[in-house]
Image (cartoon, rainbow, N blue to C red; front, top):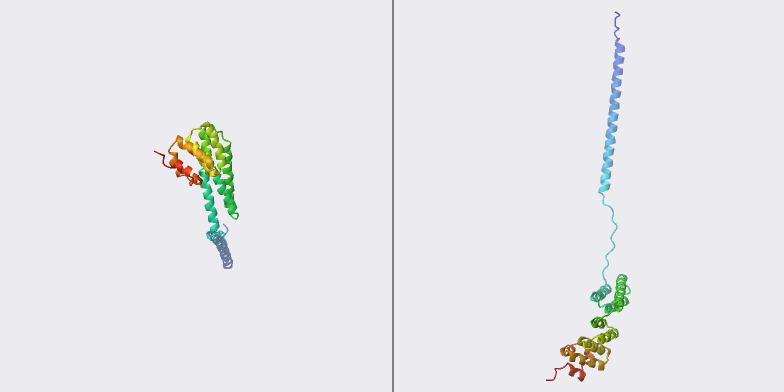
Amino acid sequence: MPKKLKPSKGTSKKIQAARTATKSAKTKKTTAIGAHKSATKAKSKSSIRSKAVIQARPRHKSAAPPERVPSRQFSGAVAALEAGIKLMYAEDYGKAVKAFNKVIADYPDEPEILASAKARSQACEKKLQERSRAVFKTADDHYNVAVALMNSGDVQAALTHLQSALKLAPKADHILYAMAAANALQGNRDQALSYLKQSIHHRAENRFQASQDNDFAVLAEEQAFKDLVGPPDK
């Protein structure tokens, strides 16, 4: 067998140096990779922290507009509008229309109040038109509408319905009484006294009612009226 050659001392040193250099290179590479990974992780954490900080920062909110302080004029407009609404809910549409029209005339600088008043006034006028087109079959149908018209101030239209009611029920004391009141409001003294006398004839209690009724204020000082509403002769 051939003999194995032993490396010389110089050759052995070179091999060992090469091995050392290789290990050093691998160590440097491993260190570099580790440093890169650490830097990447640090950058990632820094990015996450930055996003968290951005999300945590409160967003800037626009300043809310200053609240309007109600003026005396505005308060008066609201009160006048509410008065009209009460009349509307009471189905006193004639007076409600007048109230809403007054709001429109008195408060032209309040656009919201004006819009509400105009809309409600139109609704009331529509109700009045529907009421005028209604079919009246009985005396009380005419009487009820007449009372509503008198309350709203439309006495002339009320008289028209009362006349129709009397044709259907000529002896109805409540219709005769309403005819007397409507004529008194119109200043028709003789007609008012005549209808009131007939009403009391059919129902004596109307005597006391008339003495307390402001609708007969125009007759209060007349002796004929005092005789009608005073205590009956024994």
